Length: 80
Image (cartoon, rainbow, N blue to C red; front, top):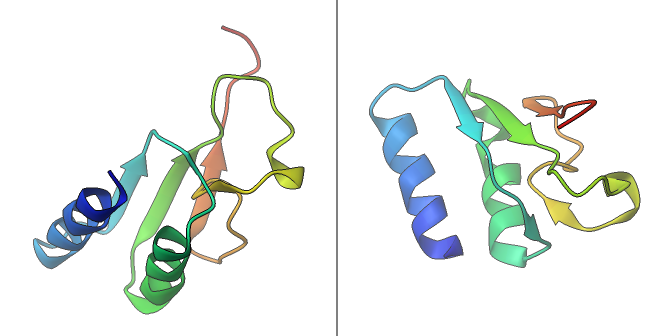
């Protein structure tokens, strides 16, 4: 759930991780959005999955992949 995802990411950063892979996505929630916005200045790069559904995520509230933050990179594939 979101609470444990936030806790896991916080734990990783506190252990010194500076690149974190997020191979998951979730529809917009205030807690996830707020957490990623708060982590902008933590010197961590987040690599976020765009998903496998072929959706145009720019028009959807799917996080963390479509957060427009300097430390977020969204990745996807062009085929299965």
